[in-house]
Length: 209
Image (tube, rainbow, N blue to C red; front, side):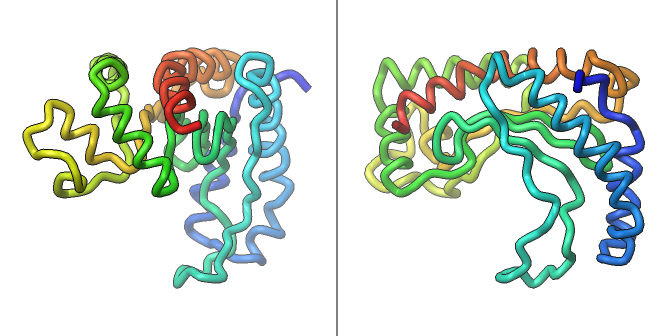
């Protein structure tokens, strides 16, 4: 099925779900989820697959086994194109609208060590510094888990100490709910945004392998 846009009914669905996150409400409105969320999101990632690869559409059910929050359903629908463990491109619909992100959101102890060694390297570190600066200038939010202090083995006056503090590194952009969200142009915006994030994803893919 061709992608025709994300209907605003998807945003309304999640806004209502936040107000009543129960199995009774979900069962009464599951047809809305299927038609307004699952079908268009599946079509969106299918359209982007030739460029970025196959995406995983996340299940709508929360894993509540180890959580104090026992609400059974996620208040968003996400999809992820993996380029490595916890590394790749992400797109999400929630009550606020469209959210697009990329980078690596988790790493092993070994992966963090590899990342920091690359940041410490004059060539690779300067390359990442340039990528992050360009993305920040373009209006992307720079995120990821960070240490409050310097990582062990590095000095606080290191020229790239801010990057060295990262244990994960992501870039993202919230688009909200513009009129084009309900049109095929939404795929163009996601594609262009992922293309802009590709330098970071490829840098991390080379470093964290």
